[in-house]
Length: 141
Image (cartoon, rainbow, N blue to C red; front, side):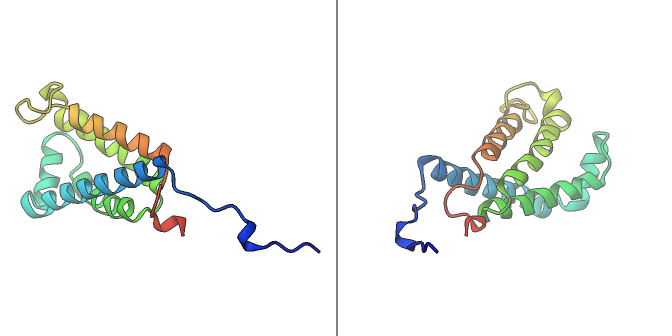
């Protein structure tokens, strides 16, 4: 019977990619929470649902978007299911680009904001899905 000394096992070291994932997780998580909070405190959930209905989408998608942004943001900050959460948020962002900003042109500085920013954010979420949790994620424990 062979015994293994714990001191001889390889130690997992964080890499630059781990820290890059951490930075992306926390920063995008905070941005998602900020956007959810804006929809709750400024536009109100009912107002957000009304906006969704005004652009031809079912109003309940406004409530789902708030939930995705809030819960997704919290999960990203914590480092829980980073790949799945990041991928789940891509359609939310592409939907914002297409339905909410598509008619406004490319640049986000255009009146009512163009689709540049939400598409860039969707690309960042795709990159984060490839990177995974990174350093200091609860799911790495």
